[in-house]
Structure formats: C-alpha cells, structure tokens
Length: 93
Image (cartoon, rainbow, N blue to C red; front, top):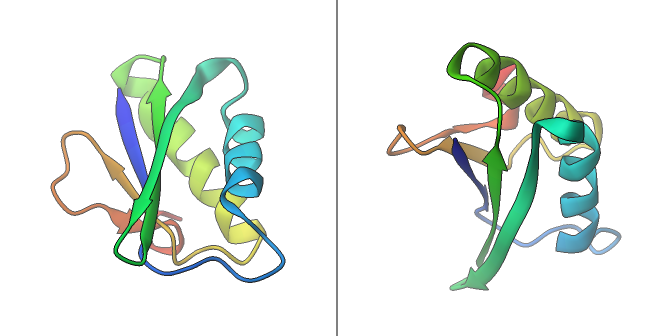
C-alpha cells in the first residue's frame, strides 16, 4: 500500500528531507521502502510503499508516525492511498 508523506512547510534548518527519509526507512524495516520524493510550492513529499497486508498496515503507519513525532516532526502529514486528506503524525498516534 502506498503512503504519501507530506511536508506542508519547510523542515527546520538542522534537518533535511534525506534525514526524514532515513527515519522512515528505519521505522519501516523489512515492511516497505521509500520509493520517491519531490518538492514544490513550499511543500515537499516522500513516497512510501508498505509491503504488509492490510491488517498490519495500520501498525506500520503508527510506526512511521511515532518515528516522526519522536523527532519533533509530528506536523508532517501521512496520507495512505485510500485517504484523500491524510492526518498529521501526531494525530495518528
């Protein structure tokens, strides 16, 4: 299942998108991978493909959210493919 990781604002000066990607890769482990990235109009995003079944998907989504919140990035939006809006990492926890 696909998850778009959306940064609706620039990252703090001491962290860049590669750092966020590393956090997500560590949180995913063997359950998926970061497959793409982009930016524009003051926003940025990362594409994540989760390879677990639908029952385990929510567990992986919470792991991604927890990794972001743990690094004061709870404002980043996680939008699963079936969700038109998504929710901030803080809201998912």
